[in-house]
Image (cartoon, rainbow, N blue to C red; front, top):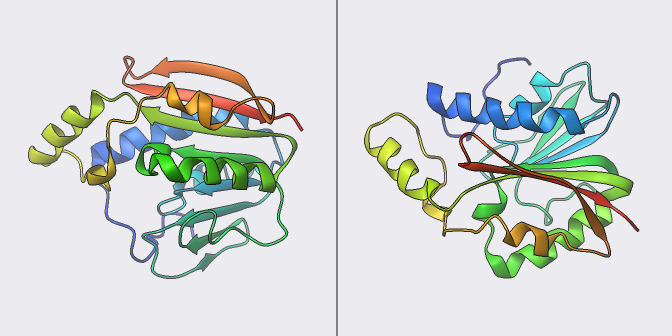
Length: 194
């Protein structure tokens, strides 16, 4: 299924793919060989295709998917996390790349609880979130037709530092916090402690 389009997922422009691929590459060092991965907001599952042969199995959840996609390496589930969380599954890693800023603040504690529930002890959460000033840049790039701007209307000026409060101690500890892409993007890696 490499390179296949998932039904319902909006088509990306070249610059969208460039940004997506940069986020996937930034997350990769925090995924060990053989890890099981849950990708929340997986789009068309490109993360799993890029990590083919490195991870064990992947499950992606994506609200824009029209139908379930199943391959030997991964499955993509239409819907939202945690409502469509796989039953009885535990994961080594959860990725949310450019996702948290789309989730309303009042829903984020429930998201953190659900992540805690499906992570194995010592499991990791890898998150990227843009800086608030990216919203203006996104709208300009959309007007110039350089990006598709998938779900840009859901951005609400999310502050990256808020991520630390969502995945807080004592259940999680911060392994890494860094800025990338000229400070326009932020990486957070958390580990489940309990």
